[in-house]
Length: 113
Image (cartoon, rainbow, N blue to C red; front, side):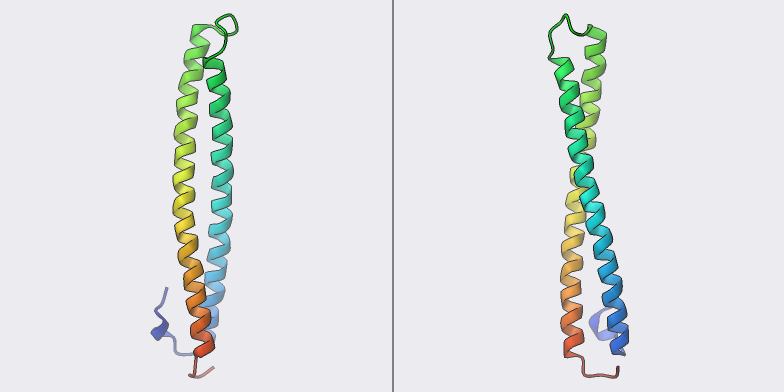
């Protein structure tokens, strides 16, 4: 991202605003998708945990062992998705701030169009 003082024309600022808006929309969609991944993994983890804690007559020890491993895997995937979501949230906040700065800079621009 160029610094505000690097712009020579108002159209350059407007181009940077459009680019930032596109980046912001992309990051927002990615963040929302990571949220759904985390939710899915949470439910998969719960389902596997249900098998692990079920009545001994319902599932064999081998099936419970597999379910326990799957529960761990889903928990790891959920944590990874949540960390990615947090990173994307920070990026989204940064882009929102940048967009606000660019729009303010454009409104105060006194140079050539």
